[in-house]
Amino acid sequence: MDIIDMAKELGNMLKESQQMVSLKKSEEVLMQDEKGKGLLNDLYMLQQEMSNAMSETTDRDILEDIQKRYSLKQDEVLAYDATRAYFEAKGNFDGLMKKINDVILYSITGQEPCSDDNCSSCGCGCGH
Figure 1 (cartoon, rainbow, N blue to C red):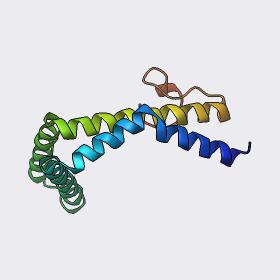
Figure 2: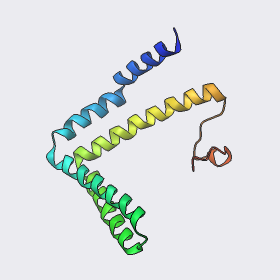
Figure 3: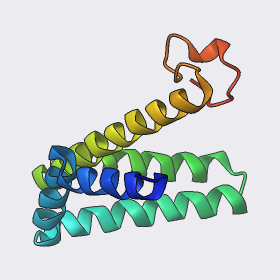
């Protein structure tokens, strides 16, 4: 079996994983939920507003106001069942992908992946 075939097999296994199934299910629920979609849209718009403001101004009051509104919207998003379930499922899937990537990198380099315990000494620059 060549490397591309193995990658396809891994992709198929990921597609059938509990994490992906849960993510797809939570996405479907969210796409049928007008309030949830609205909350996410509001959050993304505030994220964009914050990004634009950071490049256009150095006025701390403006930036703090946007950050405060963004933080409140995040709390609202995480308090709502459909959006919270989506972000939890996405976090679980992202965690699985990180573990897979860590295993692949370890297999290539022989170095243990970064963790909160050992990253400060690894020199990878990831910031942990």
